[in-house]
Amino acid sequence: MSKDVIADKIISLLFASANPISEDKFLKFLNLKDKKTLRKHIKIAEEKLTNLPLKIVLYDEKNKEYKMTVKKEFLDVVKLLTPETELSKLSLEILALVAYNEPILQSEVVNKIGTQAYEPLKFLREKNFIVRQPKGRSFILKLGENFYKYFEISESEKKKLFSSKAFKTKTQKSLEEFEKENY
Image 1 (cartoon, rainbow, N blue to C red):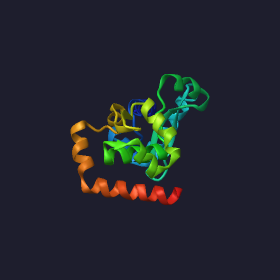
Image 2: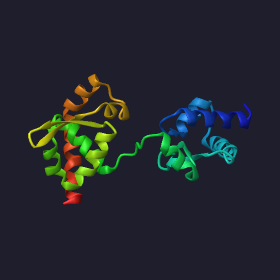
Image 3: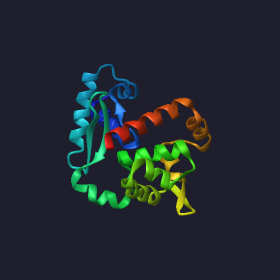
Image 4: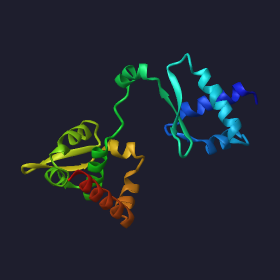
């Protein structure tokens, strides 16, 4: 295999993957023997992208994972097409709280997190990560369709996952850490 073909395959893999790809996976997919050779091919792939609005980035230095992304100067155009998918720490905490306690009153979420929860709650509703129904002077919150898509969880998997003792323990610890950091 020539270097150009390997570089093209690296670009293709990164383009097709929604997740970062580790060097170990690249070695397996490309049938390469060592990481030094792989890194040379990644450099060639990066050079091939110099005249395009894309770039390869080392996403996770510790685990040596790479991903393809849009160059900064083109992000404003891409944001028009794609919904914002980066969730803030507070949004993730709220989602964990809703997932753990579903259904839960919005007033309970605000009591646990504080009034700073309103903005992320609005964002999560707009993006259909959560849905709400009126209940007295508050709202009942449940997980929305995009929660399952974003975290790649089927409805049946959700019941098993969220009822497990490990999930409840981890979620509770996460909420306790959040409360310690913010109160």
